[in-house]
Image (cartoon, rainbow over all chains, first blue to last red; front, side):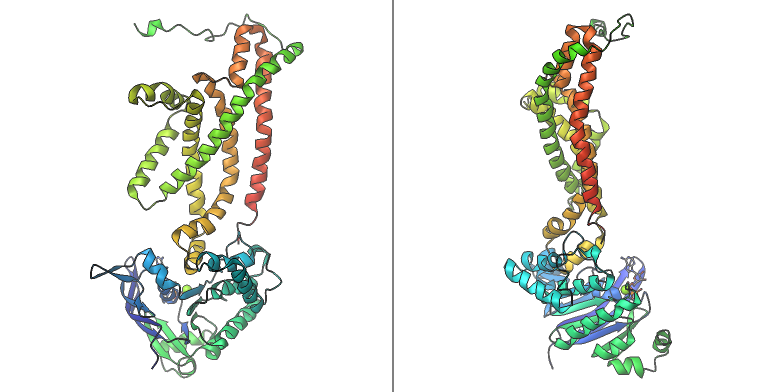
Length: 256
Length: 242
Ligand SMILES: Nc1ncnc2c1ncn2[C@@H]1O[C@H](COP(=O)(O)OP(=O)(O)OP(=O)(O)O)[C@@H](O)[C@H]1O
Ligand SMILES: [Mg+2]
């Protein structure tokens, strides 16, 4: 058995009085591809935002590569992690957002090479070379000096992926990365994710409503419902052969 | 009574028996005299603008700090300087502060610069704060996801976008600062307005011509600034929305 690279242990999350997550246990193995499906408001985004350190869990532990993400030891006691601790741990994690969040004041190339240079202290030329290679890989080698507002939604999302990938994360998080796109642009983005997934070495968590895509790419699918993981298994077990009624009625809305 | 010792200034209810015209032939005489004040006006403007913007950034960032003492203290400074008039602040720094605290703030030139910079810095700090808050939350989150430190997020991602939003308002305040420099003659600086007033008091009949020229001087100084604001507006429109 390989050690999991990420462990969620009894994670609860409330926003004010609203309990969004009610005990999530989850293991992610290195290179594992996990798809998260579930109705709107079930907490899919919240799960991956906690892993990206954008949201603090109310209780429970998240362990990344053996290190507690949100807690650290201080004078023999576990206390809330500070920014320094978070910076050490989240270097392994990358994320692609639903609304791209590209940096509008930078060219496509600068969007990609800024973090390697300033965060990883990479040599400028090397960062530039790697960024260009990555942008070529996602099919944007001819747009290097364009600004984000000169691109289509699909192109923006591919830049966002290249930007995350040049940081060489061990885990990549995708939050409904195609749902803000026009239907005809969804294919090109899924194609890139498929290619990345095939390369293998990186673990991926994909929040998605694209069931065919999940069947194709995911090793494991989680069905999130009312704050718990209601169903878990291989893609075919969960999407094609589950007896769970709520899951079936949820899936029904995507089959037409 | 103390008040009775104050003489009624001569410009109170200016008698309309004085008639005057704008004299073209006097312009050539007045112009060089006003020119002598140009250096002071321009240097006070440049220095006040520099320190004013600096103050705006310092106070604007302090207002956003996690440190509550810093936040409250800066808030106090901003409210005091926005809530009182620049003339009074000028006189405070010139007369009251040295007498009360024994602090010499430097030459009159420096006192003028400090007063204008503190006053406009207070106003402009709200622009700095507002612009930083107006940068979309997703930008900070994307920068965090790339593991930037909070300092890197501010320097590389937030500020460059926020500054673009600040530019047009900064430009407008620059023009206002130019106009505010005309107050420094009250603390004995020899700026354009000072020389204008000297000319008028030497020969009252020259007043219309003198003040027409003074107006023109300020307007011509403002022209490049107006052009700068236009430019700033077009820069700020470019490349902000993703
Ligand atoms: N910052 C927040 N403050 C208050 N409530 C929040 C916040 N973020 C999320 N929520 C609430 O938490 C619940 C779960 O949100 P989340 O975004 O994780 O759902 P989701 O499964 O991603 O939904 P969707 O498919 O619509 O994206 C929702 O009810 C949402 O309103
Ligand atoms: Mg969501």
